[in-house]
Length: 216
Image (cartoon, rainbow, N blue to C red; front, side, top):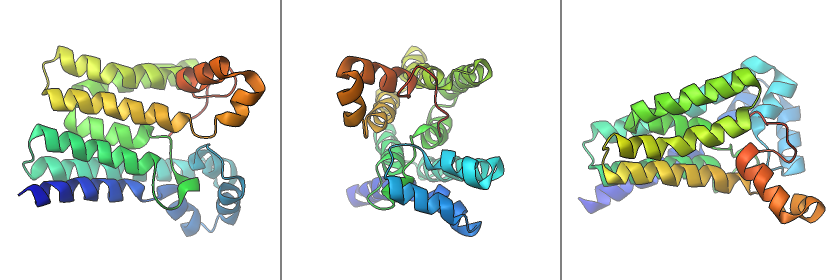
């Protein structure tokens, strides 16, 4: 029985690692996207490269694929009748695979799409709150801080609703993964601007300057 539960966690991580941006780039033969992603080894998001070199439609397709893969694995885990603790572990694993894959690392995403898919399945009402904050931030041109506030609100709203503790903890862990992904590649920025400012901008704004960054 325990093996089956761990299999869901492993499947969640492996499902999260599927590099949707790479698949879309290959499908569209957008070689420049692939070359730039691997050439720069950037901590940035491949969805942005897709939008720049293959069009907004390509970026939207990759974002929807990332959202869909996370939601489908989470939904399958939910239908399998796992208890809240194992659902939570599977959800965290999906986002971990999305943000920190063991292959195709230049195509690792920043975690928002996978986090949205997982949270929509396991914590739908908190995700509605987070989504509303994200949409408001996008409308105001402040996507970075809106994503921070939105996903920080998920465990808070879940706790206020009396959701199982494991799922509340999942919301916090997913937010932690999003923040951890933002810290990738921060050393050169910190050397130039100082650690306090670099950390503040990355963790709050998801940017190296005060302008917000488009995320996925």
